[in-house]
Image 1: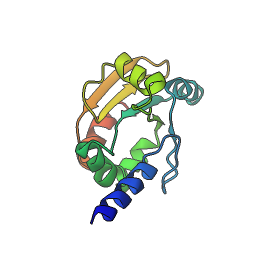
Image 2 (image 1 turned 90 degrees about the vertical axis):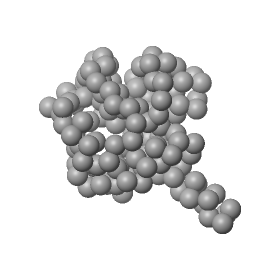
Image 3 (image 1 turned 120 degrees about the horizontal axis):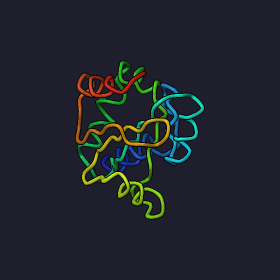
Image 4 (image 1 turned 60 degrees about the horizontal axis):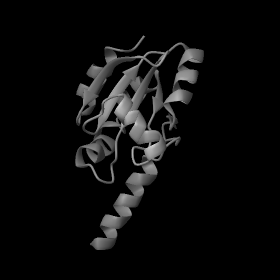
Length: 138
């Protein structure tokens, strides 16, 4: 049983690693600055996900239940996606402080210039997540 838990944790970490592609070809960047550059070029908004599925049950629920949903993935494709490593003091922790992240998961929506225009905190099932994101789509 212990090994099963370790294996599941390793799988979750692999699925949520920064700058990774999922089966749906969603690309998650690890740098907000890189996200702003891409968003300016595309003329779109940025979704920044502050999460740590290895230590946060609601974050794991987002990874397991919300992000695999095909409708969620279709909506996410309209954003530049950024997932800073919040365990990295130089990058993620400073980003979390800049955007006043007090709990995870936190989703911060930025305009193409990097200004915050929205946020959501906590686990959201697919329908609620889509509803929240629809406020910020083009």
